[in-house]
Length: 334
Ligand SMILES: Cc1cc2nc3c(=O)[nH]c(=O)nc-3n(C[C@H](O)[C@H](O)[C@H](O)COP(=O)(O)OP(=O)(O)OC[C@H]3O[C@@H](n4cnc5c(N)ncnc54)[C@H](O)[C@@H]3O)c2cc1C
Image (tube, rainbow, N blue to C red; front, side, top):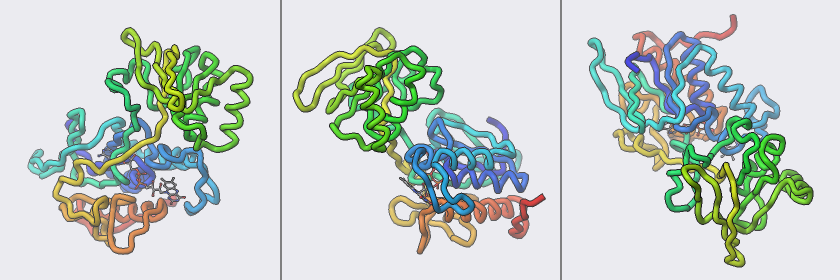
């Protein structure tokens, strides 16, 4: 991309999306870069089915619904969004007589902007992967870390791995799409997921629509170019069995790391947060702001509601800096 944006936002969690709202509302051009293939940060990745009760104006809202509302609000002014791109490097370059910040992603994409607002939460999310040799080679060849479109699994024989809400939700949610039975593999006897989901899966097992294999782990993935079968070991007896499948869906949660952002020379607050001045949300690097869980200062509370406030402070201060104005937030009412 050769365009110079006013603002690049790293991270499309609730706070990144709120930042995009405030920036767009002030007619700043925005690019959001997100390492996951989805919007919504922790809320969508970690607890999409749980209810949140403490976001002002929402007495009770499900995680995914909150993420969707944040996306609808944040993207209404047409921010560009780069999904599946982890930001790695930050450099300063000259561009048409002005100094701009250039971010480079893990795949080599470059994004240039006048200021940068880091809303990276605990760092870039990555799906937890199976501890199987050569697992990465099966990505895009029948191994999935998300269920984005149910239709991609139509009439496919699916093996789902995991014991949490996502694994159970998709074991139930793909019943009308995938070939039955769907195999559910979990390394423990007990599932962490909501009891009612586990009960529903057990009921479907009795009807022959779900096959539950526990306590078990996938030891090998095999196939001729695409996934055709997995070798599964019962970790209690040591017995192994081959299970034929067209789709292997591993839903083992996510882990995150601040990664290379921690090496940019930003002053940190503790080990995992970027130190900011809470009056402006500016970091120790000129033109670089931070908000949300990743931003630290004395007395910081890591809550969505606090991040929303910080998003407004960061975006309005960043815009004042770009335009050489005093900080003047505008009301949104029309
Ligand atoms: C189980 C659970 C329950 C919670 N319940 C509540 C609650 O009830 N109320 C509440 O207020 N808070 C709650 N929280 C906390 C809340 O989810 C966080 O405060 C909030 O998600 C922070 O938003 P954020 O946008 O700052 O960061 P995140 O939601 O973490 O989003 C950051 C995004 O940035 C991306 N990213 C990071 N680094 C990079 C990079 N280098 N390149 C590209 N993208 C990157 C990540 O992939 C991620 O999507 C809960 C958290 C958990 C885990």
